[in-house]
Amino acid sequence: MKKTESIHSLPVLLAIVFAVTLYRYYMLIQASGVIDLYADEAYYWGWARHFDFGYYSKPPMVAWLIMIGTSLFGDTFVGIKIMSLFVYLFTTINIYFLAKELFDEETAFFSALAFFTLPAVWLSSLIISTDVPFLFFWSLGMLFFVKAIRSDRWRDWIVTGVAGGGGLLSKYTMIIFLVSALAYLALSPRYRHHLTNPKLYGAMGLAALLFSPNLWWNYTHEFVSFKHTSRDNAHITGIHFHVGKMLEFLGSQFGVFGPVLFGWLLAILPRYRTLRNDESFKLLWWFIVPMFGLILVVSLLSRAFANWSAPMYVASTLLVVAWLLRRHYRKWLYAAIAVNVLFGVAFYHLHDITRFLGIELTKKTDPYRRVLGWKTLGEAVERILKAHPGAKLLSDDRKEMAELLFYTHTSPENAVKWNPAHTLRDHYELTTDMRNHLGEDFIYVTHRKKVDSVLERFESAEKVTTIEIPLYKDYTMVFDVYYLKHFKGYR
Image (tube, rainbow, N blue to C red; front, side, top):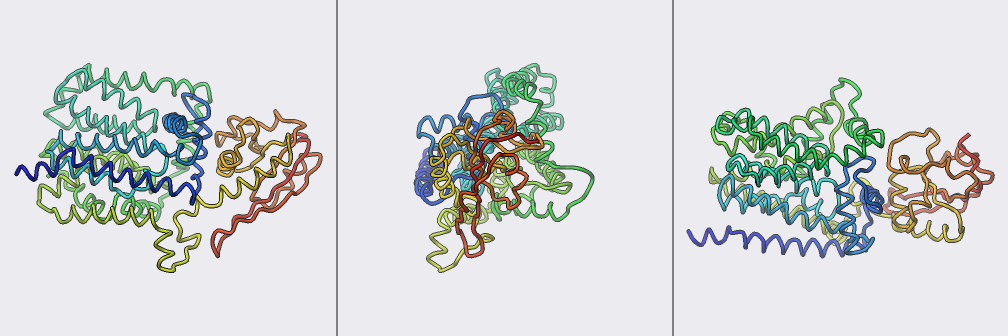
């Protein structure tokens, strides 16, 4: 018995987690010379160049994390991404203590290990995104919410409120945490009395207070973040059913949560009548279903990306692990973790594996296709900018502009987004305006072929070059570069 407890102890877990983190750090260093920044990472890095309480499409936490990372490692590939590794360490520890609070040490050990080896975490550990801090605050909030309803200590309610505020500053869907918590309390005879507990509302007030700077930022910026979330993310324009999109979303969950774990989750969730007899299982169920149900509805009415369900991974991991352990289905649990580890390692070494096997990847088969070629493009454009001193960078695409700003080492003051319709669809349209640059010269980089409407708004336009970057046998990145002199105005 003592041997089993020692194997499933926190020190053993931390040893495994630190070893895997070192491996992931090594892979991050190796990747810096092979792949480029994902467009959204470059986009967030642009935000992080100046401190604020809000940015165009997201709350500020992801930019703040990048600020910390770049202050330690510089404005580099590693510096931008590095905080993901550190944050996932603490998220995993949160999950360990949450599972220990709800169940026992063995369940805590395997829940933390299962979470840390989810395919989504393998991928997200090397990417800086809003999900990184979001999962940390969600797991922290769940841990101290459980502590608070059991102890009713002010300390636990305060940390729950801090986690709620931090979550809202990471991703607006943190509001679903409140829905889950209130639904569980309403249906729990043991803890329903907390619905009249002033400490609960004190925690909610603290979360709102911490979130208020972002709310004020939105108020002073036409609520642009909320408009983007409702318009561009959910993109629901009417009652139209897209069963195929919903099935596509469900299929993606087998990939991000792992085929074995997600298969068991789908088998367990319908058994609410059984689960509700155990307070821990019932709580976990309510921290899964509201988010899962919402995303399923969105995917049916419009579309949903695989990572939108990220916060349910916390409770889902605990639910499946505890269920399998209680029924002595250890082989399923071991298989689930093993499959996910194999997936993660194979993903990290995909290019090495395909080269060894003699498999030629294409644009359709290479998951890294969106992070290739940007450094090469940036270096070429940077040489052109240096050859035309005084000319500013001009782009007509958000993702391309983000990548170019990073890889040409151009300051935001020397780059402008082409926006003749004066729309407000991204950070660059919010912060730049060609109307403030009358009479100035630009280096215009575009993948568009029909650009006459742009060129005619300058006194002269000279095509400098066409940059071709062959990536696969079936795809070559192609960009035309123009030297545009003396902007006359949009009309």
